[in-house]
Length: 245
Length: 278
Image 1: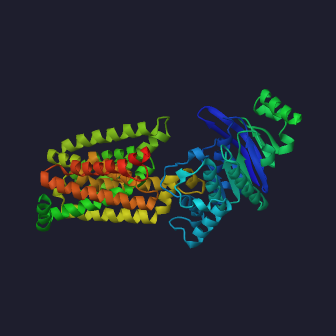
Image 2: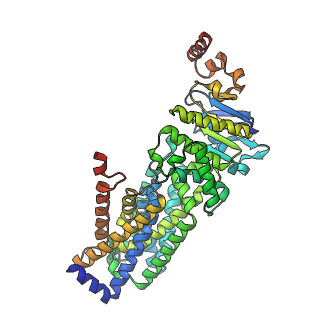
Image 3: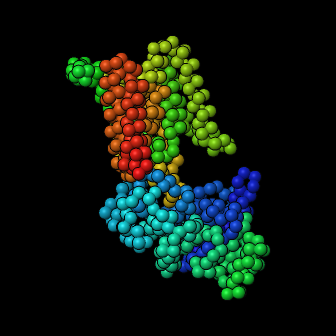
């Protein structure tokens, strides 16, 4: 279980959120939703220690996050990746072995075989030698999920994995997320649109500069919470459609 | 004709042999380190470090110590200062780079003029490969050794921090240590390249062969090799031009590198202009 206590982050004078506390269960796929600028990415970056927080602690099964960094896989937003870099799909996946190898050790046969296996799991083996700029958005996303597989992490955090990807990629990624759930990993997915929230997530954290609601998806995904976090208009559109079906 | 003359001169004169060896070593090391510099989007930083070592060079002259020591201190100091200013203010990195390196450069000019050695200044600025001494050559070979060792041992760390620094941070890699180590090695390379192309054009040796290599491959390891090869070709041909036509060695070498770049820009299979038009 990932526990975050009293986390506060601000950019200069502007607080993004303060005193945020939340528990995220393992063995579940947890979604974080909220409008643009709600602080979703900031939240996970603060938990990962990528940005400074003014206060707060995060621990996993009683151990501070710093101590288990190698057991965390982070799948960034695709827009943050340098697509012109001279690196192949296979070599990107192979970087997933770096954390375990430690400083200066190079990946060997074992790591390379495992990397190929990870690529197989997301059905991207045919693209192993492609330069990463020559992939579709969905294919690229699968490559980074393959890297996360290779990391064999206990905690997997994905930032907007489903944005603008094809159905085949979405299914492939969803299959992996479910497999991770069965392996009792802690899975956290930042998600920005409200479609298919029910299909994707067991638990949901609804954010808007702090936590609006959290808990099992069927409990918290309701008109009140959505209108609180987004807008009453959006909420009425979403939920009236649903009732009409 | 001219080439035959050059080759026979190469057999006859020690100074020319030293020049050739040094030029090749500088071509290799700047090609390798330059590849990382351009992939990290740090071309401006490369320029900044190379200019910032000037006061170090001056101080080394004054105190009679090894150039490498003086220059390294100021190069690393500049890198630290650039990092410090941009993290402790809302100023963007490129502005911080601009302020720091121009200040160091200015300070360097003043210090050099105090040593009353205007011929030295000209050589420092534009390079004087034909005056390379044996001890210069030794220092250069030591730096080449350091560069090859650094890139071989730290290849994986250099790759991941260049490609995906955020990822490296999440698994706990000390990316700052890698960054400043690279800055230190960059400074050493800069001091070596100073002899062949001079401070002003060092950045060209770092960036142009690497950018040329980038056109020809999708593999980092291959890019490093190609970049070193392009750097070497530029150095050899540039030295020939410098010797034969009595041009300053720096501009001669850099012009050759630029021609290689231009050719690759137009004809390379990966992204050359010709191919894009198809």
